[in-house]
Image 1 (cartoon, rainbow, N blue to C red):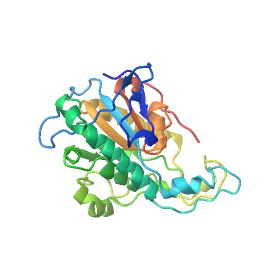
Image 2: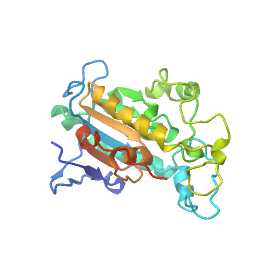
Image 3: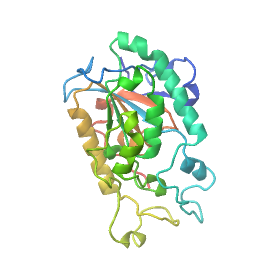
Length: 273
């Protein structure tokens, strides 16, 4: 059973080590699969508490750029890395996570502690991370959903998405379904007024930013969406801003946070600039 927040650093994903629990206990990180065509095993009814496993995407081109040109630093300029991809390091992180998940899948299935649903942001880096991390005979059977509500807050060009029809053509073989999301599903504005009233730190930007209002609204709606789902154990592959917004916890690339919906359902949405 879970006890508060449990975080597994990405550096430990390739080896079998205990996962440190905030209360001081130790327990292994548990994942497995749910058959795609049957009712989720171990699930609670809609409205009941749920196990939520957050995964931040692996290292991206934009992450590496921001490591040398920090957001908000003097003279900052968005490099135009639209819908940024994983770097080789980010792919390796996702592969390490896959080895960890695969090694525990069989025994967690036997204990009825498998993941029942995999939910992913439609940004390319999260689709890459989820598709790699949840690959393999067992893990690929987990039902998959794309939900734009957990996309990254619109800060930079990397947070501008790819049209749904193009995503469908590129990712259909991985089991992702984009039929239910609009063609343009990321935040945008019709006017250039954002250049005058931009809330972001000083810099040169190529796309409007997402104000706090729309961001907090969609994350609040996502919490309600989770509450209404019938599955009992849900993995959510998302971004630093959305995971921090929901939980107040800051994750490194490909870091894993396991918790319960009740731990953050009634928290305010955490917003930074």
